[in-house]
Length: 242
Image 1 (cartoon, rainbow, N blue to C red):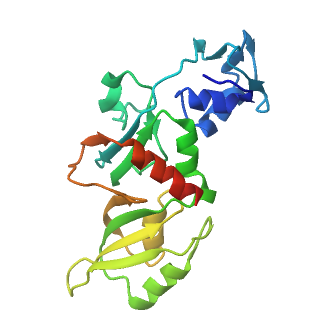
Image 2: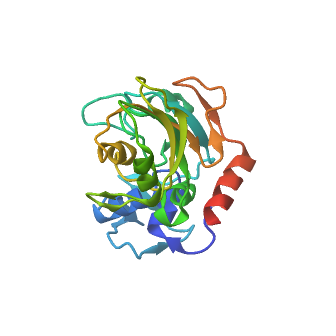
C-alpha cells in the first residue's frame, strides 16, 4: 500500500485499474472520488488512509502481472470495444486481474503485445522519452529501393511530423517477389509503419511485431501468451531508464 502522498492518477495506476494517462482522463471526467467527494483536479494527492473510488468501486492492491501475448490480427488493443469486436483482454477474463494492453497494435497487425496491471511499468514502456524499441516484420507489395531505405533510416515527413530514424534489415529481396524487411522504431504513432511505406506508395501486406526491446516471440503461436519473469520486467524498466 501507499505510505507517502502520491498523485491521484498514480495511485489509480498502481492499483491496476488502468494506465496513468487513462487515469487522468477518468479524473477529468468526474469518475473518481476521494473520501466520498468527486475530484477532478489532477494535482490532488492521496495517502493509504484515503478511500479512493473509480466509478464507485474502491481501489484494491492487486498482485502485479506482466504478460507477453502473441496478438493475432483481428483483435482490438483495448479492454472493451463499442462495436463488440474481440479485444486483446478477452481471453484473460478468467485471470481475475484488471489487466490492459501496454500501448497498442493495430487491428490488422499481429505480434508482441504486453499486458499488465502496473501503471508505472506502462509509463516506462509507452512514454516517448524512454524510446523503447520495437521491431516489425513487414511484407510489402513491391520493393523499397535503396535510396528509399536510406531516406527511411534518416526519417521521413508524415502528416504528423518527421519520424525518428528507423533501423532496416532486409529479409527477402528477390525479383518478382514481395519484399520482406525488419523495421525497428521507438515511436508509437498510429499506423506508423504502414504509413511509412505508404509514403513510398507501397502497401503493407502483412505486419507482425516480432521484438519488443529484447523480448521476442520465442516459440509462441498466434493467440498464445506467457508471463514475463521478474528479471525480464526489471531489465525492460532498466533499459527504458537508460
